Length: 284
Ligand SMILES: [Mg+2]
Image (cartoon, rainbow, N blue to C red; front, side, top):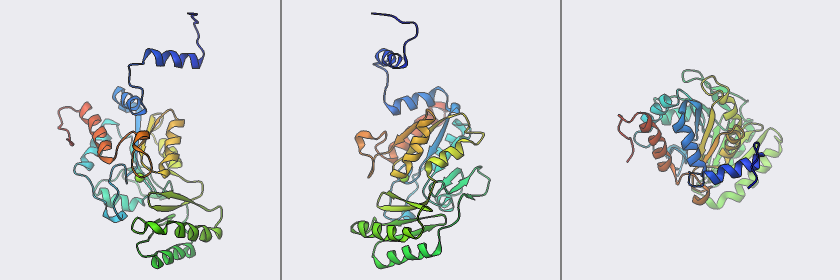
């Protein structure tokens, strides 16, 4: 075998893989190793629905799992403050769900930011035009089971209770958005369409929050379950971080890192109990 003192990067990678053939090689294992090695070198970004919370028939009917708030507070200690929520919901609504807890967060796919737990919510862009919101509310009134949810700078159309309406809603959205071309874009999600300001995404949210002092220079870990999270996965991976996928209606179990929110919470709980073993585990 020819030995070189300075192997090229692919050779170095092959060498590493062969030497570590018995070591964990999956994305989740690598991420777990990074966190356990030094959580204060990592930053945690969490989607809510489908990631921390089970999906519900309507956005208002989600249930907060027992112990979630305590788990988040303990994560804040382990990660030394570098824990943030990145959600498609409005932050006012996310706050109600997690009440009385408020975290550093981004809402409406990057269109809202809260850069400190005690700080006001900043709106990054203007609200949607009234005529567009009214048009979408009209669609919701015409199709039973469809729900239009204005979110200030964005809007969601939910059709979980009317799955056959997908094509019709997509057509209505496309024609309404023709009048506002270049200003907004449509993001399909789990039985919903999100209308999001152009140029903003959960990826821009992750980048903005990563610039905060407690997040700066850390390995970003984004956990999410939907198409809207992919921009944040890409932003995290671009920064040598991790995008951890939760299985569900979007990711098949064989390509996901977690089988569902329950397994995400178990993984987070394992991290906090690892660093504070005197505290009981919150989850069986
Ligand atoms: Mg989600």
